[in-house]
Amino acid sequence: MTGKDYGKIDSQRVAFIGLGVMGYPMAGHLAGAGHQVTVYNRNPKRAAAWVEEFGGKSAPSPRAASEQAALVFCCVGNDDDLRSVVLGDSGAFAGMAPGATFVDHTTASADVARELAQQASERGLFFIDAPVSGGNVGAINGALTVMCGGDEQAFSRMQPVAMAFAKAVTRLGDSGAGQLAKMVNQIAVAGLVQGLAEAIAFGQKAGLDMKAVLDVIGKGAAQSWQMDNRGPTMIDNQFDFGFAVDLMRKDLGLVLDEARNNGARLPVTALVDQFYADIQASGGNRLDTSSLITRLK
Image (tube, rainbow, N blue to C red; front, side, top):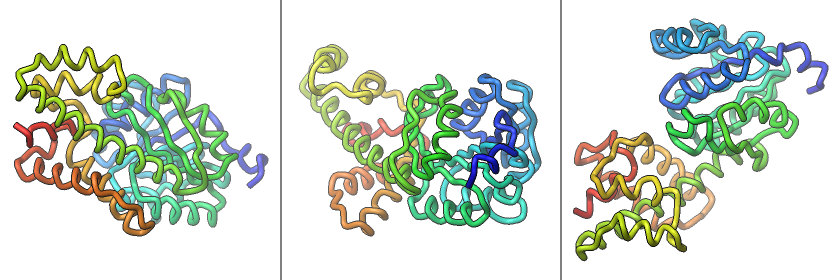
């Protein structure tokens, strides 16, 4: 793909597909950075509300949203959702001009990233898998971490644009590398949250003032984002802080599927996944991931 091909597209025109708890503020940051943003959402009322708040315009299909856009950003639920907005006569690929780049922020499988990257290439398009970390708060604050896989030149064009809603946008390899990096992230988070839950539950059983304890140990080797941000809310039995158990189980399912394929051994991750299944079975599907501590009380 040549720079000349890309030059036929208005670099200020972008699209955003999927206006959920993450996509809505992310698209807003793009508009705030001065881009001409066209949005698509499965529920058109949500898209209309976004336009009223941020300007730009909405489109009736992913294809219509993507026409003449240099970059098409997307954040939906899973592999099947992603295929549904990308492929087919009304999908984004059908509307994108040669040289345009599709940037997928969905947490999905590495396989679907590679599949869609191949189909994009056959159409003269680029595909970047770019899952994010930082949750709804990070999206609202424009402070997400974005892990990317795909063509290096396409990445170099999308990276400065994506910085509108991110604190770091990093290419980690070819197609699929972003999704694999997100899996690494979720493996680490699952273990951290379970360890923090056990530590707090232990300290409470021992009669300690756990907020004071966390303040002390948070200045040492035990410190983590989870401890700083979710430790106090776990102590207060508050579990309404964004990333839900249902979503974590979806992500850990992707992790465990990939591990079965590549031979990685993940005994702690598999165990924590079952602990999250316990939370679901007790009706805690929409509680945030720190609700693991409720199993221990």
